[in-house]
Image 1 (cartoon, rainbow, N blue to C red):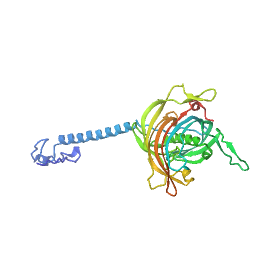
Image 2: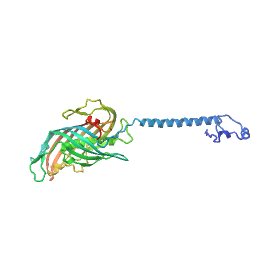
Image 3: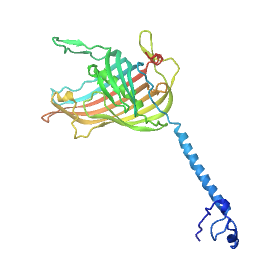
Image 4: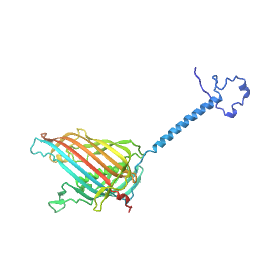
Amino acid sequence: MNIKLRCNSRPRENQFADVDKVSSRSDPGPGRLDGAPGNDFCELFAAAKGVLSLLTILLMVATVLGDENRVMFVPHLQVGQVLRYDVHMRETKTVKAKVWNSHFRAPKAASIEAYGLLKVEILDVQPSANGETIQLRTTFETFTSNTAIRVPNTEKGQTGEQQLPKKNLTIVAAILADRAVTDVQGLAEMLPEQQRLWREWMSNFTLYAQVPRLGMKRGDGWPSEQPELAPADLGGLFWDGKSTYVGDESCRGSSLTLNGEAVPSSLPPERCGAFVLRAKLQQKPSSVDVTPDAFKLRELTTYGTAQGKKETRVYLTRKIGCLMNASSKAERHLDVHVRAVNGSDQGRCKVVVRTYTSAFLVWESLLTEVH
């Protein structure tokens, strides 16, 4: 038996206007089944609909309140503001080589230690529809490396070698709202170690631009791809992974001693958003020539396999919304085959490279007034 509920839609004050017509019919009661349901039943049904509507509204409110747990990281930087970062890199490279041609020079083992004090000056901040465009100038106020710092003298009329300056080298760049870094000037004049330190620092400094504009909750993440910055005997390498927001944690920067050295800060810790990037080393398709330029100049080609893993931890300070500190560990295993352009085998190398990098905000620079 099908039961259809048909409540009278007439206004309540007019429902019994035609009393004579109604009284001529028998009334089976409020729960009748021979026609429209009784008024009490209709009211009960309407009340049930109201309860369902209220539950829907409460669910929407709960969703909105849940979104309040989302955090946003927008840099609060001002024109004239100055920040300083203590940057550091340590790298070891081991090589096991088999040489079939005596003229082939296999890659050498190496150990690199480099560190410096990077000054960051905010030159301009321009709001845009998707965020802010920031123009900045960075300067290595100090820089030390255990690698050679003598390069050929390219000045007109000069011969021999000249010593590349260790400090006061300036790089100007613009950071767009989508994290793209453009208009980079001065990077080519830097030492290779300085270039890598700067690129690694910039990659972490611009992490805020990857955070969704509506914010994110603990456990949220997004895919991440970064180029391989270390010189390699195979080209076409990149890091493919995922960045994840793991919640807020306490973090510290660095402090400067009287002689200008950066040491761990003894000041109270800051509240920071913590992010973890885990990535694996990948190669471009085998159809792409992955020979580095250093081998091409010697009329050699390289091919082989590469494996590796990298973990980076980044902390963004909630005070000004930018990089507080970052540290990264990476390990790569390369199996490289070298051939001459005529196809003859020259050698094979198994290379292992381990790298550690870090960047710590010098705490005192947060206390410096904008000038």
